[in-house]
Length: 327
Image (cartoon, rainbow, N blue to C red; front, side):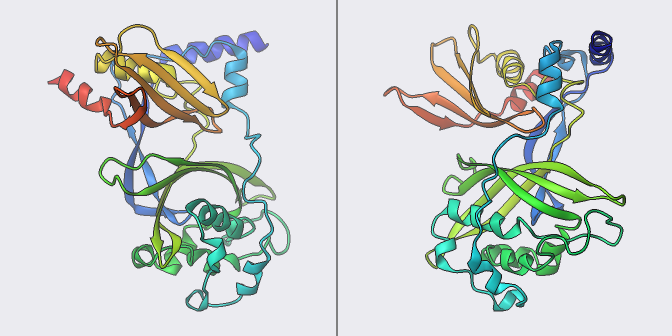
């Protein structure tokens, strides 16, 4: 039975492959979890892109793509000072400075506040009685935002973006390189585990990844922007190659850009993956990926070794190579 199921999966992959590439293009029309959506951009289907990763091993298929997270949560601390702020209007709340001392402190404490917040809609049948701290934490969490971010998002818009989110666990947190067009920004990668409500007597787990940007404001670090994307669980194991770090570099960097000379080397440490390669001039590179809970490898940054033997951030956009090849 298991062998038959694997064969069916492989046939499905061979019949129809849709390659999807995640980008950091921002969709300003929607808000989720207090931030904007990261828009997914599709690569057009054609024979050139009709590739697929080697998903034929049953352990690869069933363990990587169909399992929930086993990561410890990072926002499990009980912070008693936040409870004294519940019940107040958001305009009356001042966050203690000790919760905002460093960018990492700000992010962790922000999600400590939101951990037990719940904003069920009228159709939610999940849970029983009052869920967690109900809406009490949202006015507190809103004050982790910088003044500039509050001008972009009203409190009511912020509250609505958490609709039907009933519990939030922070499971991954890493400082990452700034964006090319904003080299001085403070940027962190996060992954969230969220319990969402349903119209039945059950809740469901959903996962989101995204980026949080911070700025210093009056000696404290506040959140100036957030971007999130939901994780899709039934694309990677059936379709495409761009979800796998090695194939991503093999096709985009080697075939599209002719940047890779020789073999690729993949090193994995936990959910971090580095794909190393050299160009025809023997320059050394690696592409950093983080593996999400749904098994997808998300590109984080590109690095090149300089003349002094140190790795430096560089910015490579393989899609530009593809555009040149089309012309």
